[in-house]
Amino acid sequence: MSLVRLNIKGISYSQTQNGAYALILNEVDGDRKLPIVIGAFEAQSIAIALEKEIRPPRPLTHDLFKNFADRFDIVVKQVIIHKLVDGVFYSSLICERDKIEEIIDARTSDAIALALRFQAPIFTYKNILDKAGIYLKVNPKKDDEEQDSILVDDLIVEEIEAASLEQDGYKNTSLDELNALLDEAVNNEDYETAAKIRDEISKR
Image 1: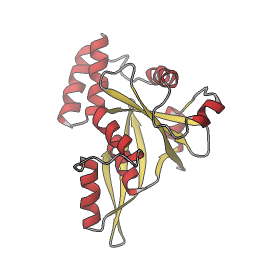
Image 2 (image 1 turned 135 degrees about the vertical axis):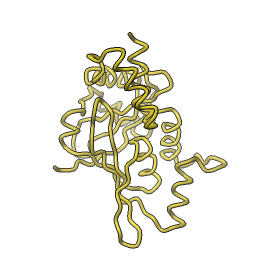
Image 3 (image 1 turned 90 degrees about the vertical axis):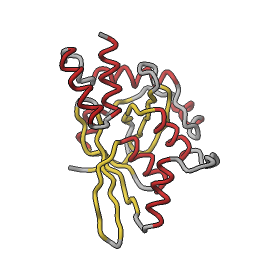
């Protein structure tokens, strides 16, 4: 399967999920966008890494991981978003130490926060982009003017979230099944999935 390189288009507050943010990844050699719902802490961490002038007084969790890795000569070479199940993205960190490569499982939001700190490229597989990628009707002139902004226009976010809702895999799931999935997600510390399931339960 061929890999497609992505870069970060921006972040915006999610209109449909309380306390969540929409992270938009852009296909480097194409026009498709890959929207990913992330938590507030991860959004803050990514935003701080994007805005190089902002330096927190104490290291954030992802900064601590970077400092720890630097101390022990561990380098994150790249991040690969390798799987999409029920609207949840799964990612891997490709790390290297003493010329030995290791693959570490990670939440996509954490993986991207670390990729920014290690200046590592972000990739996904073509079949994932074919499945979850969307085209946005963005005014090219306005897009160029806002190139340096990490905040995405609300109209773009509404379009992203409308497209994301079409891909939601929980619509045909019963309430009992949703509650069981919620318990499983919390036990696995998969809070991105738990937030989505909780919002679906609230809608019912």
